[in-house]
Each structure stands twice: as C-alpha cells, then as structure tokens.
Length: 138
Length: 381
Image 1 (cartoon, rainbow over the protein chains, first blue to last red):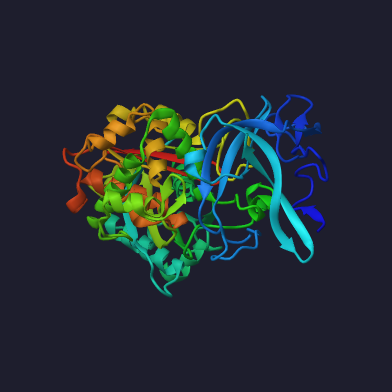
Image 2 (spheres, one colour):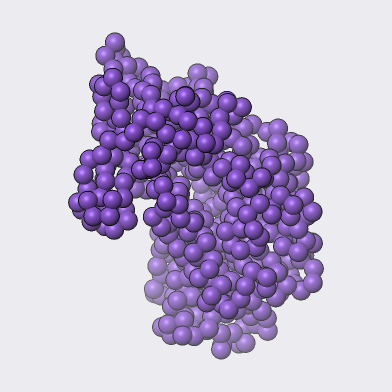
C-alpha cells in the first residue's frame, strides 16, 4: 500500500530517517516548526528551511482520551478511537515541538525521558496509507 | 487621565436557556446593570460588546432603544470580556465619554471548543492531527507544573470541589450541585491528569458592567467601586501557549504574569492587599497555576494552601467565590464580566450566602485564553 504524509512539508518523506521540517531566522537565529515566512521573534523575512534532529527529550506531556471533533481527520469513530499521548519534545538545543506520542500510558511517560521521531499509520484513504509523525520513547 | 468607577453590574444567569438568544440575554444584563445604578439607557454614551458566537453584539440596541450611540463589537478569545472592559474604561479615562457599558454574551454548543486552526495562526494539519484542543494544552501545562512543583491530583480535586461548593451558593451558576473530591478524581480522564469534573463547560449567559467617570459616580450610587487598573497582554516569544505547534527552548513566563505586574503597578496595589480573587479556572489546574502567575503565592505553595482551605470563601485568599468557570461554565464573551460582577457584589457586601467575611476592600480578576492572551483588572472601594 502506498504511503503519503498527512500534510505536506511537515517531515521529509519518503526517507529512511525522516526529519521534521522547520525554519530558522537568518537575522536572530530563532527557529520555528513548521516553516513560516517571517520570524516570530524579530519579524525578519530571512527564514531558511531547517531540518531538526530526530532525537529529543520529553519536556511536557498529556494524553488525549476522547475523540477530537473536526477538523480532526484520524477517521476513527467513538467505538474505534484509542487514546494517544501528546508531548512537547525538545530536539537538541534548537526547538521544542508538539507532537503525538506512541505511548499513552501515564505510568510509562515521564518528563525528561528520551524520545525519537517515528512515522506511524494515521488513516487509510482507499488504497493509500496516510501517515503522521509521532515520538516514541527510546 | 480620568479615574473610572463601576456604578452598576448586571448578570443574566449562566447555563442552558433553550431558544433564548444571546442578544436577548445581553440586553437583560444591561437592563440589570442600569437598574443597579439607577441609570437609564439614554444615559449611556457608548458601549463595547464582546462575543465569540454573535457577530453583532450591538444588536442589543434593538431591544434597549436605538439611540445611535457608538457601539463597538470585540472578540479577543477568552480575554474578550477583559478587552470590552478595558476599551470602555479607556474611553472614559481619555475624556471622550462620561458613561458607558461593557457587555458580553454568548451561546455555545456542548463539548470542547473547536474551529479552524488557521484562524488561530496554527497550521491546518494541527487540527487534522488531533492537537487543536485547549483541554490538551491545559493537561500538558499542569502535568509539567505538578511534576516541577510537587502538586498532587488530590489538590486538583480540591480546587474543583471548592468551586462546585461555591456554585451551590450562587443562584446564577450553571452547576449548583456539590461534587466530592473522590468523584471528581474518578470521573472520566480527558487529558491526563485532568478529569471531566475538573473542566469547565462552554454554556450560555451574559453580563454587563456600567462604568462612568469617577467624579460623577455619586450621582448614581453611594458605593462606587473604582476600577484601579486594567491590563491586557499577549504571549511573548518563549512562552508555550494554547495552540502552539512549537515553543522556543528559552522559556518565558505566561502573558498573565506580564498583565498582572502591569496592573499592580498601575493600581499601586500589591497581591497582599487583595481581599477577593477571581481567576481563570478553565480547569482545576489553571486555577492552581494562575494563583502563582498572579502573585498570590509561590510556585508549589498551592499544595499546602488548598489543603488548609486558604482559597475557600472564609480563607485568607478567597478564589472564585461564585464558583468560577467550573461552576458557571464559560460563555466566552461574558465570562470576564461575570468575574467583575462577583467582585463588585463582594466589595459592596452584597454577595449573600457566599459573602467573604471581613469587608474586603480590594478585588482582582484575571482571564486567560487562546491563543495566549491574558487580561487583569483590579478594583477597590
């Protein structure tokens, strides 16, 4: 089954070692995720594409235990929905990004834990597997 | 700059009201505020109206009288009511008007708020991926705070139980049934560590505050409450806020901290002077963090303060004496003016069964919401 990212320009794909795609300010070195055309700190428009490290540290986390309303597009129903974790992950010393976690058991999640980027199935569109990004504990 | 006095407050109850429109509720809140001040609609020279759901809050003029006054509609997330209050006060401070009204009204459907993330500056995939949820942000923020400062889930339950108890004493509240701590802890987990009974609900309601130049307040009331300061702030670079797909490594404090400091400085009043407090309790964790963000305690002290009942109506830091958002729900446009209504009732000694003892002289209210906006008001006799 062919795999397609759930949105363009979020992570490099296809790739053996996919990376999240952001941007970095050429004036003040602020970084953003995803890319944006101007700097959130100094307002400059000199932003360049930046690929982030794949590994990081869990700064904060929670669980999503109810089915989100639209525009959520995971395709589950109330019956098939399974809780997922959400975390704020610091990648190197560059940036903190928010993303899903592959783990949703509070007993197995802790601040300061090491995690790595992974690409996981999100939903099936006909004969296409749509994939999203997530972090898994290392 | 002129000083500003609050001479009238009016509140349409918060809850669910069938087919009754938000505009009707807003008009009723204004009538109550006018009656409270002994003023008439024709005395009102201008107005600011706040709402999330209603495109034109100014349509209340169709129910009050089309007097042709300038009536400005505002929306500023969960800080909408604080914005309407500040704009109305500024019109009087600047000397342009003598008397005006700030009104807020809303009528939400059930369940967590949702929208198009691109309207909040977030990427559209943020919603498709299941991250565009305010409840998730509050879960993450309090979870980290509890880890860093030693706050337990029992303390979250104490906050929610207190606000439900205060709601029992408030005839205008949405939720008027006490809920025990264990039931709160055992209700459905929504976003760890926050359970369903720890969250407020979107609902319906309206509130209005009548303001005038302080030197003419005596024409309307013998007990004016002076609006000593208002402050609004947005998130700075470095703050991790609602609907953020990323945050900077170098952390900055939340916008509430900046709004709070600015309001204290303007008022010449410190947190130690405040006798009655209204804080944004979107959830029990938010009330805990907002206690320290607004200067009422150090980070981590909440564990002990809640255990000893310091934030109860009879405690030394009474917080959300009318039940807060947890018992009243959140009609976004009205929520912050409900806070002001409660502070004014408390300072006048008109809060009935939930009156804070000892004649409080200074009140404080704070709003916070998406996408990282805070509003603070300080009032005194």
